[in-house]
Structure formats: structure tokens, C-alpha cells
Image 1 (tube, rainbow, N blue to C red):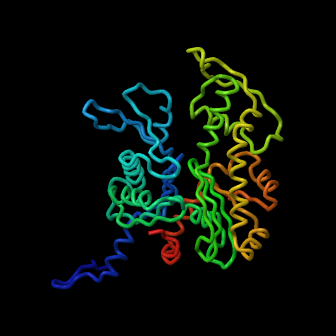
Image 2: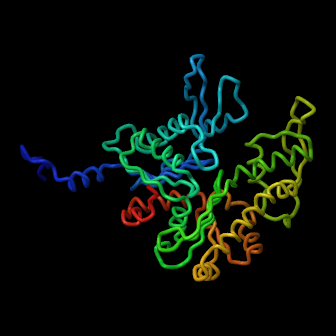
Length: 358
């Protein structure tokens, strides 16, 4: 087969140049989450699923040197000397530390693309619907600064709905509730657009904080974020109608220096997270009240779909269905729903142009 070349004095047609670039481009879909960052590479699948955590050492001159990113950095939470900071640069679904977020994003993009990329990738990034223009710009600039040739921001809930297989392009109501680490995205979608959307600063982190505060008040003990997350995953449940379990955790009494084993119950954990869950119930009810009657009727027939890591909380679907009075289902892969939806947009430029926020 002959080589492709450009005759002297003639330029390469722009459409051909774009097709050639796209052929070698390692396009990416990114779910830049408060708890975890997931990266999907076009044609290869999920290539990165790491905690959104960075460990840095502060030099005397004020410069930051990266020690670890992702899973290795998360292991350091609560276990580092004063010279090292373990930072979560995404808070409540948006960038809170721009410099560290850039370091983290650069690391994940390089990990996804490999050391030798022939072109600047096209990147689709999921963001909360409540993000301000400044927050959206920060996300886009972070991606551009680390090598993106083209950046598209898409609503987190729309991406999750697409990833969950909801027919978002049809003239019918689809309701998605995506419970992430920092935010919960509630959306009603029809004809590829948002009919109703709300971004709540409630998610897995709020569950963990509630557990920490209840144990502090009730038992006068202090536990860290990692321990709170572990007990939430182990015994946390929506509603307090499950069998009570008793177990030991290592904690520090506020009146003593040394850590000790403390007996707590699953009822303690469920009571702690009951508050944030009640807020979610009220937010979903409000969304249904604000939804046009015809679309609300569609949702009443099809039910509500939940995604995100928070959707894995035990008994959540049963409890929410009972409280709201509608069918509730959990997407088949709730942790990956948003990034899978964003990856499908890489294959459908028409739909991408319809849902892109920029």
C-alpha cells in the first residue's frame, strides 16, 4: 500500500487532517469525582480507577513535591508527619486546590495515554450541574494544561443516565439520582436535555462526617475519615430496620492519648446517616413536585434510577422506594455509570454536541 503524502504547494484538507488526528488520538472520558477519579480510554475501556487523593511534601522554599497519587496516597491519610500533606483536591464535586488537581489530573491522563501519545486527546469530563462558571473553567483549564486538545464538560447526571442505559434522547421523563462522594445530582431528563436539575452538597463524605460526629458525641471518641468510611461500607444501611450488629473499632478517647478498642453497633451507624438520607428523600420529592405532569407520569411508570458509589449503601433502593412511593432501581454498575456514559459520548458526536455544557 502506497504512502500518503502531500504534493508540494498543496495543503492537507482539514477534514482529512482531523480524521488522521482522530485515528491516532487516545480520546478520554473522565469522571473527576470527590472520592475517586475514573478514566476511560476510547477503544480500550476503563484504564484508571483511583482515589482522588494526592500526598505532597512541602519544601522549605514553599514548593510541593508529589510523593504519591491515588491509592498509595489514600493509604497515608491520618498517618503522615507534619511535613507531608495528604490532599483531596476535589471537594463537593469541584476543584478546591487548583495546583494539586492539575498534578493529579496530569498523572491520570499520562497513565491513561501512556508516555508516547501522537496527538492531544479529546476529553469529556463529568461535572456537577450546580458548578459555577468559574468552577467549570477551572476543570477545563486543568485538562487543557495537561495536554487535552479538546475539552467537553457534560452534566454528571446526564452522563450517568446514559451509562445506566436510560433513553435520554426520547420525549419521555427519565429520573437519575447520582450519589457521589461530594455531591448528589438529581435530574429529570427528556430529549437529551435537563428539565429539572439539582446539585446537593450531600454524598458519601457527608455520611462519613455524620458517623464521626455521632461517635464523638455518644462515646466521646475520635475516629478518622478512613475508619468512618470502612464502618459505613461494612454495616451502614438506609433505615434502621435491619438486624443490629455489634463490633469493635480502634478509636481514641478524647480524654486519653492512646487508642483503644471500642464497641459500637450498626444501629449507631444507621442513626448517624439517617439525617443525610432524609435530606435526599426530601430533595427527590421536591424534584418530582417540580417536574411537569406528563414527565412525572413517565417516571411513575418507569421509576427512578440511582447511580454513584452512594447507591451501594445497603437497603437504599428499598428504603427510598418505600419513602417516595415509586419504583427505585440501582444501575447495573453504579460506580462506573457516569464514566461509561461519558465514554459513549466519545462515539456519538451528535449527542455530545447536544449535551455539552461548553
